[in-house]
Length: 361
Ligand SMILES: NC(=O)c1ccc[n+]([C@@H]2O[C@H](COP(=O)([O-])OP(=O)(O)OC[C@H]3O[C@@H](n4cnc5c(N)ncnc54)[C@H](O)[C@@H]3O)[C@@H](O)[C@H]2O)c1
Ligand SMILES: [Zn+2]
Image (cartoon, helix red, strand yellow):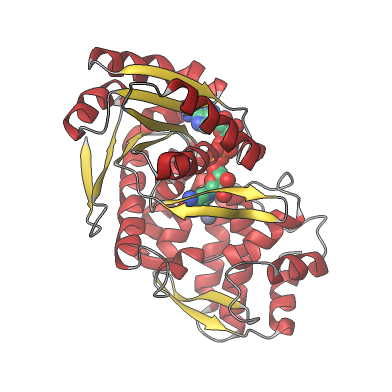
């Protein structure tokens, strides 16, 4: 088991990474003194596969346990679902000391974190991420939220968990498409911060696709450290440092939205967005063509999509303009200087963006 400190001024906590550690969370939570009554927010599949170990460990440590299941899929990140949960918790919460355990992927993590942030103006919560994407990305950083009809993640908060408990063993039941999805963000970490890590992923992607526990543990821990470092230096996303986590996301989010959130998963859209961002970087002469080729090859080897299909360039542009990261009407791209180093550039000419999108057709 390894423990990574997230030394935030007022919300310091730890990320714990290991295998077969679900049953040990109860004992750890006892020492954190965050309440006596655990409310696990999860979905039926995750609960069926992995709920037993988690719940048994909690009960053994003296916690009462209530499980709230939500249906799988992005649609659960809605105001309707969030407030249904809040009502349910409010009815249950009588003479209790409740706290929430977000037990699932990014959907459950964002939703449960939002519920924890809003109910009684905030109760303690814990992240137990069960997808690769959630372990390396969404569970870390305290961004919680739900989607509105006009856009994703538009209602939310910065609300840090008391601990992040990443058990890589649970990834063995994850469909391969979801593993690839998480790998997209892992490739991103290599590009934005660590060339050596990028090379490690190049050499080990096959083992990762086979869920090799040793390799998975290393990439989850390296990725967690990279994200943690960025979050610690810019917790509320106000200094422009946290923006580098958005490499591939300006176009990626637009592709995800233009595909109505069902054509491509998040990591898949981001893989396409990273290809476009790399091509823009090359056109702007920020990086070498060889670096662009290395990014494209690794994404292709992992089995992430290589071509933007059935989505018009005009649709990508229109969704890009709705991105909340657009600064006073100017587009903003994180671009690659080399593998391991990026910079933010504003006001990229539409012709350059269009040409980069064409390179992924
Ligand atoms: N808060 C943030 O900083 C942040 C960052 C990135 C993404 N996100 C959000 O994360 C969400 C996507 O998260 P995701 O990719 O984890 O998808 P997800 O939560 O929808 O999970 C994907 C699927 O995997 C299943 N699943 C989860 N764990 C499993 C397991 N161990 N075994 C078998 N099946 C399992 C789920 O039931 C679901 O069907 C999006 O809503 C996105 O906006 C948030
Ligand atoms: Zn992402």
